[in-house]
Length: 115
Length: 115
Picture (cartoon, rainbow over the protein chains, first blue to last red):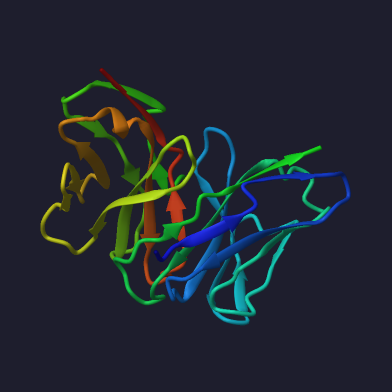
C-alpha cells in the first residue's frame, strides 16, 4: 500500500540535543511538507519542498532544518535552537505542485517531548 | 487576520443525525481551494472533501457535503447520518492563489457523536 511513514512515533529530546524525525513516502509525490501541531491548535507549516534538493521555509522555520536528497524522503531536524519543541509533528506529501484540487496526504505523526 | 476561522471548539451530535461544522475564510485572491480533514485521536489527518473557488456546485463525497457560500466566504462541512466513528477533530484548510504549497489551517472543531 502506498503511503507516508513517519518514525519514530514518540521521541524524547534532551536539552541541547538535535533530533531528526523521519518521513518517507512511496506515493511518487513531488511536494512534501512538515507541520507542527500544538494542543488545541491547527497545523503550522515549518518547511516544504517542491522538488529534490530544494526546500522553502514556512511560517515557523526557526530552530528547524530539513533536507531533500531523495524524492521519497524529507527528514526534519529539530535543533537545540528550538526552545519549545514539544509538539506533534506531521509530515505530508502532495502529488503535483500545479494541480489545484490535490489534497495533502499525511503520515501518522511523531510526538516529540522534552526530557 | 486569520485566514481560516472555525468558531466551534466542540460539538455534540446524536448518532444518525446530521451536523454542520462551520468554516469561514479570508482571502482576496479569486483562485483558492478549500479542504476538510478529519483527525481521529490516533493523530493522522484524513482528507474528506474539496471545494474549488470556481466550482459551480457544492462538493459532495458520500456522507460529507460542503455548504459553500462564496459571498459570505464560508465553507461549512455537513456530515449526514452521524456515526460513532465520526468522533474526531475536523480541520478546515485553504490553499490560496497560485501558491500550491501554502495551506492555511483552522484551529479545528472537536466532534463528539453520542450513541
